[in-house]
Length: 330
Image 1 (cartoon, one colour):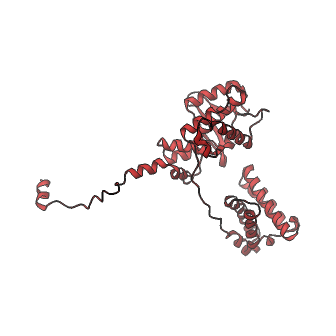
Image 2: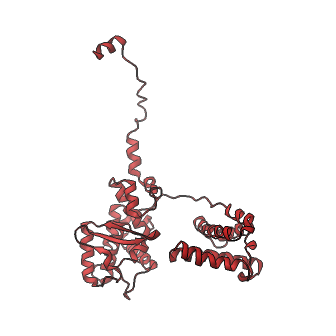
Image 3: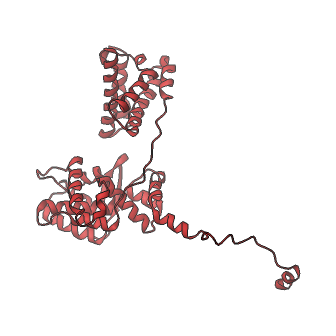
């Protein structure tokens, strides 16, 4: 057994699981990144992963692997950077366990992430949201479930994992109606509900008749909905909504689009960016700045404050006559 195998075992069991208490999603993402890296080295050298040493994962090999992700696997720069972040985390752990390979580790840690093109956030306007919410056929059980799910998603801005993780006990519909979720970063947060949302969710809970630990939005088999299932339902209803709202034709609607739509509605209502960050469960307000870039209303208000073209400048200030200034001061 090489020195790489116990290093990987310690990285996942000691650092990620015991020390950091990383979520299953983080562990799975790091596992996939390392598995792809070992598979790439195996294809390149013919050596089995169990026989590899940390010296086989030098900066040249890691660079070739990252290039392979983009050219051969067709991954985006964002995915490439996510794989690199997992590799960097492994090598930071290795720096404490294998100081004799410090020079090699430092060269790997010096590999920079790739710069990304940042597109403007895609979101739905109020008429588009209304058309999407009205799209499900509420004469069926699935339609009423989807109607409640879409309305709650657009009003609260919950992530799709937070939506699928909701149970009946997470919804409080009495005074101070809110929904409680356990979100990204192992943070609990409460999001208030509007009266229309309370009315729809109360009707759905009465029909749902679930116990406290049952999923709020179950599948047809009574289990929690998967991320893919939510995506399929959103895509289906967006296609239906295009018949009544043609502007949806030019937009790709995903569950995360509903989250962006909630943030843009809050921003248009004059809510401060720091409050929007708390509402969405962002780690800092830096992430929330993307919505300022997407809001044309803010830019249009700034434009109206500029002097119209062709009128010239207002001129510089000229002090009044000294004698008149003296008399004015009396």
